[in-house]
Length: 218
Image (cartoon, rainbow, N blue to C red):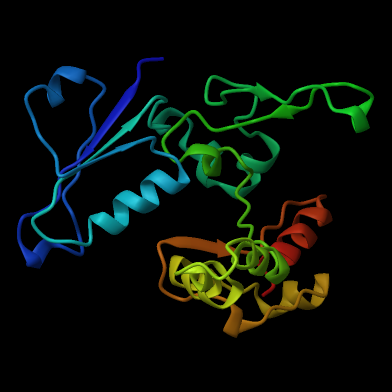
């Protein structure tokens, strides 16, 4: 598969800052001789989030270079919840298919470590799950920095605000919520972010709902 080069060409006026122009190409010569204010290497979850935030500035150009494809030919397996979970892209050309070193607690066997090789990165092959860490995990990041300047930015309070900013959450309808005993805390979720999340239900897979309930509850 040819490397995917995705230059995000941003509008040069404030009027277009919230809706940057963008185009993609798999032809490296399309970037020959061009200069950009920022070049982001890797169009995965973090790379695209960074490029998107940079795109909020005016008079700025950004290029994102991704080794995998753009996923157009497998769009349903990325965006349709049931397909992404039951017919996902792990162990395909869209997966770097890494393995861990032999693990003593797994009988000395290496374990599969899927990582996305496609625009969107591992978020494109993870079954459509929206996962956040627990409060102790984020607070541990703060503690590990031993009071360094900016350490509080990595604690739960600040990270929770950033997570909510990134999310648009749609709650499960009342009938299904009652059927599966699903609860959620509205205050823990965002309402106008770029990432859309909800509870996922696949017929015959009750555990899918429960796993998403666990991951989505604040």
